[in-house]
Length: 269
Image (cartoon, rainbow, N blue to C red):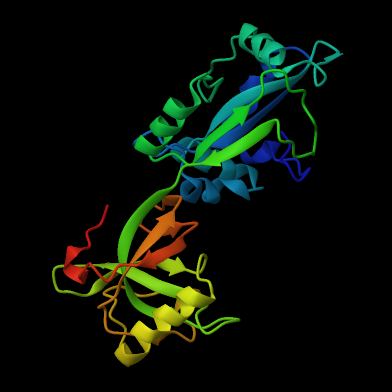
């Protein structure tokens, strides 16, 4: 097994070793995922497996948090190079191999793009990849024939502070109120803050400076470094991709201030 970087990673995933004996002379393309209790891929959980290169530790982790290999393409079969074949022919050849196993599978494809995207959002998946049926495989190259479409969500959060960066606001520190009014930290929002938004935010935040953080939990050092705390009174709308198991936002972007909302109106999705 090889990573996209070219590094051999066979030793990291011993639970996939038997896959090599199920098909003769083939090169497969796919993605290793680690599914959480709800059956959703979790990048946070996978991170514990990704860089393991010790055989004994890899075996222990394979037993406790096994991965699943999602196979989505077939590049070579019995000496034949299939990369010049159209995608729908490669896919048919892949499905003919019947590669379902204990820790690997060929996931289904869907022809209804809008419905598939809606299902990805409903199940809180990262998104989907749309592929032209006649596209060839282009090793190491990006192509408009394959398009990654990220599922995105929006929600409201309360600002508890900000961290300066190259500009006055490098990132907003946001959270959701708990029963005692203190905030549960949900992440640092740095994207989407243009010059006009920064001026509007500073106009609201500067008069609300406070020496004490309004968060109930400890803020990660990389987020808290140089932070300016404020009273938790300002609500903002944020777009994000997914949430980590502890509720932190992935790929968050600021959308707008919500002067029509009070902190007590904010809930945790």
